[in-house]
Image 1 (tube, rainbow, N blue to C red):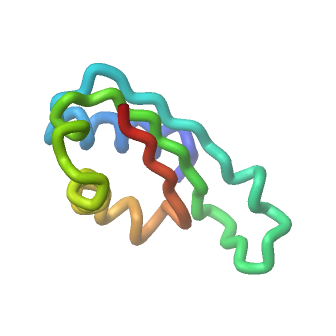
Image 2 (cartoon, rainbow, N blue to C red):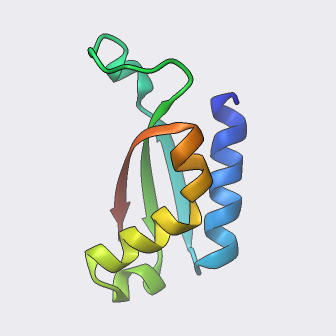
Length: 86
């Protein structure tokens, strides 16, 4: 899957299950290409999410919720994900 399609899928899935004011996703894969454990076609993503719903939750609860929503993508296409919530 290419990165643009993956980003669209992630945004759609998160917006479907969480009240989101804004979501921005950055591909940070280029920073990891020389790492020993680098896997081609697995992405390193940084999510910026503005959501009152997530902000009310603990950090662990909000992260678990996002991981559950993105379960399939995490297994198939995402090597690592950084989540920033405000």
